[in-house]
Amino acid sequence: MPQSTGRVWKLGADIDTDALAPGRWMKLALPELAAHCLEAVRPEFAREVRAGDVIAAGPNFGIGSSREQAAAALKHLGIAAVLAPSFAGIFYRNAINLGLPVLTCRDAERLADGERIALDLRQGIVTRADGSTLACEPLPPFLWDIVAAGGLLPSLKQRFASKGVKAS
Image (cartoon, rainbow, N blue to C red; front, top):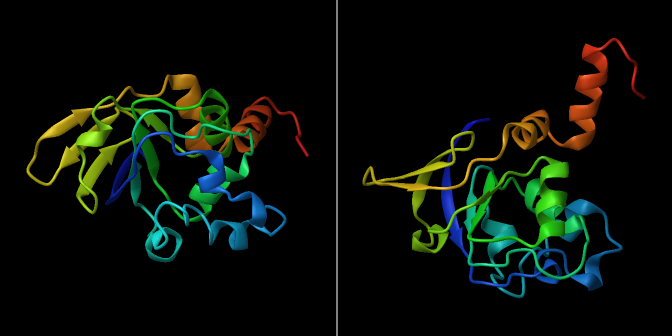
């Protein structure tokens, strides 16, 4: 999982959780909710996004409510990572808890929509097609371990299993 190659979906600043998981679709199951992810901002997003694609956004990504479905919808759609200069705290934590990499990257807005990049998630290095790189803040090791395990619950199950404790 540390290496990822994908297409960039460029978004602006202040993308809120209602754009990621629209309230009027919240009672639907995750696959149906995810089909409406970002429809108010990029109507084609849920239909055209592919596993391994990356979101490059402006500051304050994930502002708004605390709905964890916002991060869950992105993960369900196969987003490999979200890069932004800053994140709403609750969204950031929800993303980590669900195993969605979120990297603080002050230069995320320099990436172009549709650009193909390689991303070293562990080191926080974005490599562009021309060979130039952008540095993101890598996740601290304890958060990386959660993401690499697939989220907080799988991480805890692994930790308990390694200590001989059966987790249900």
